[in-house]
Length: 283
Image 1: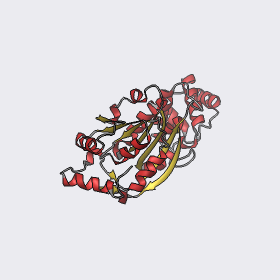
Image 2: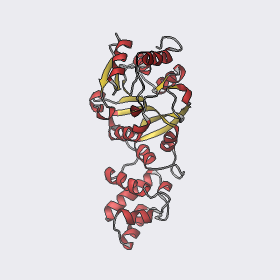
Image 3: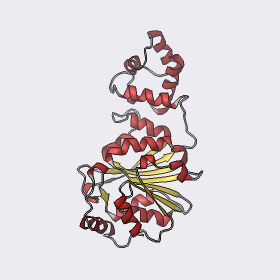
Image 4: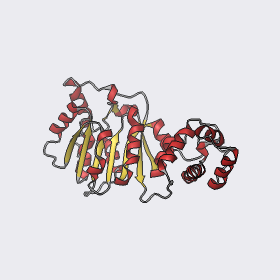
């Protein structure tokens, strides 16, 4: 448990006094509100048997809360100076494993040890898309993820089909997981303060998938192409994606049971899978 109400803020002040300057290139905005840290740890819904990976663990304040609740916590941090600070703070915590380096290269399957893990993190804004894509690739070994991201990105991820915000990242995540937008986090909860608001989302990964595309790579390639021409009809996007004749487009429409006059954001996950399968079968 955190030792005192202001412990996270004191930890960040101590880092500054020791000469550590938050690195903008790494998205280092440390969450210092102890109540919000506890809410994130609570949202992870951990049991004493859970294995946890924390992304960008910084000074280790959230790591400490996670270690109180889980079997083991892998503390992934690219800044080796911060990781050394963590080692001092968490000395004696035998269930914390320090993992220096980029999370994008972290061995998720190895950490899961044949089971399913929980992923928690205050995500660097610039790396959000790449981190989400990596989590989706390894979704078979993840039970739940609780992530603090930029509020605008959280709203896009959680956007339902048919809304203007529904896009490729919404589809990518909803294909693999149920998405819940939990709560917002204001700039004052961080040091240094970011210029934008944040939000915490929870992803509960499907097992098994409720709907599956015959070729998942083809599905996401198609989504990238069609969402690249937002507000255009699917028919127009398909013509640019693949040279399909008018007759082939009619077959796609019939097989997929999708109106090609619709726009990409109008389709739900199941319709996207049917469309991708139909394009592959026809093309």
